[in-house]
Structures are given as C-alpha cells and as structure tokens.
Length: 376
Image (cartoon, rainbow, N blue to C red; front, side, top):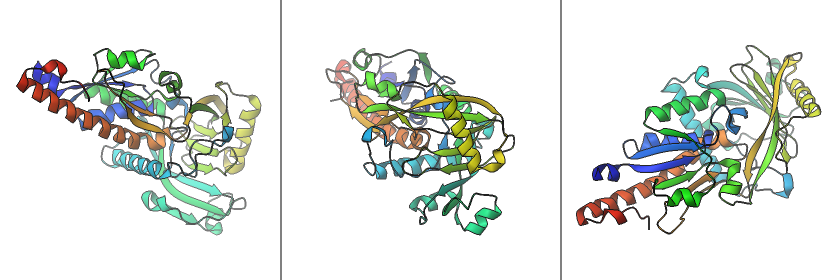
C-alpha cells in the first residue's frame, strides 16, 4: 500500500472542456502509472462551451482576447502564446499522421484561406503549417475567391476540431488510461485542496474561475454562430480586420459554421435575428457559392477572456493543502492553445510529482509517511 501511495499522485482536474480534458489526457500519457486522474465538472460534452465553438486552429495571433472594454493585451504574451500554438498544431498533426484520427473522431485537416484588406508579408508561422502560399490576385480569382475585395490572400492547410466528436474521443482516451470522471460542481478550491483526497488540483474552469478563483480580470466575450446545410463543403475561409467582428466559414462533419460576433459585457448566450441575418449575409459575401444554403441552427457562446493574459501558474494554498495549478482564460483560442497549455501544466505537475516521490521515499526510509505529502 505504501508503494502505491508513492507511485500514484492523486490529481483532480476541474473542468471538462477542451482545456480540462487536454490536461487530463496529457498527464495520463506523460505520467502513466504515476498519477491517478479524476476529471470533475458540472457539465460534460455535449454541454460545454467547447462543444459550441468553431474549433479552428490557426497558429497566429494579431492580438489576445478582445478590444471590448478598452482592454488591449496586444503583444503582452504573444511569444508564449505562439509557442503553445505551435505545440498544439504539431500535436494535432501527429494525431492525424501517426494515430490516424479521422473526421469521425472530430479532427479534420482542411484547405484554409485567410484574407486581409491590406498587403501583408508572409508571416513567421507560415513555415510551421502545411502547404502555405501567398496567392497572387490571378490565382485567387482562378480559385473562385473574392480577390476583388482583398489585397492579401493566404492559402494553407490547418485543423478544424468538432468538439461534439473530439471531446468524447478525449474522454474515452482518459478513461482507457485509468482516469475517472465525476459530475460535481466545485465551489471552493480551498475545501477541495484541503480535503486530503488529492495531491494536486488543476483548475480548468474557464469563466467559472471568476468565482472559483476570485479572478476579476476574467470576463465573457460573446460570439454568435450560425450553422448551415452545405454538403461536401470542406474549406475554411477567414477574414478578421482589427476593429471588426471576425468573418469565418468553418466546415464540420454535419454542417458548416458561419460566424461571428465579438460582444463584451454580456452573460447572455441568446442569439438575435438581426445578428444571425448579418452573419449569414457577410459570410455569403465572403464565399458566394454558399448563397441559398439553409440555416439549420444558431447559438451564442461565451469566450473566457482574461486580461492581460491566459493564466497558467501554480498557486500554493498553504496550510498543508494541495497546490492549485491554474489553466484558464484562453479567450476564443482554446482549441488553438489547448495542447500547448496542457504540456506546460504537465511540466509544473511533474515537478511536484518528483517532490512527492522524493519525500515519500524518504518518509518510507525514516518512518514518517504522514508528513511526506507536504509540498513545501
């Protein structure tokens, strides 16, 4: 029994969206046989924010979060974000090439077109994605693109994640590696950390961290999305200028998503008829061949934006309680960053695991196991 205690660090992951499940799966893979993972959440797929988002993975950042409320993070954390994005892109590429994930699992590699109204040089991240090319106007026109509206058109391949399929796939993988799941609303980190059931607690609750972690720098930014029927359409089209709502067309396995809006200071997920009509109109203007496609649904989702940056750090609760590793505030970039932030969390947890094993081993040698599980 003592040996088992030394080998298995008890980890609670709070949250079952893309961030929480990525952390749970990453830890299960990296520390298999050394951790006991429990993912706890009030809601699981298909009832999470991650289920309703576009799931587009483009490893580029013009700014973080939103310009709403006058909060512009801009370049505050771009280097860190960029590395997380690269790690995520590479991970998804491995899933496709080495593990053979298919659209049925919620992961698709699709041609992507990104548009700008001004002229831009080839970006630094171009070498990191598949088949990047900056198109000449004649090439764009030949492909049926709106070259008359834009001075810069980039073409490359990137990933689209359908959360309603991908999150269940991740859940199965965690379970296959021994992870457990618990439907539970956590209302106090202090109580969970001090209860003695876990050696480390990882907070991946998104907007829930505003109350759970007392973080007033976290706030919602609403995005409205429209789903249309467009069988066989398998391209991404994306246009986002600095002060405008993003325009995107993103395929899923059963529909095509059109978006979106950027609305600060609201907790409502309701859609408005004018917004739905506006989204449809501008996306059809971007991709005219979608004209006449039937609308099959619309919804709103709340992006968990944090100023000035995503929070990925350890908080020592004290008093002999388990530490908390926070991982939240990804804004609308949860899918872009999910594996990169999970790997960073894993590194933090790994250092604590090593401390636990070292102290527990010493405790076995010295006969004072009860004090071995202090972190400091």
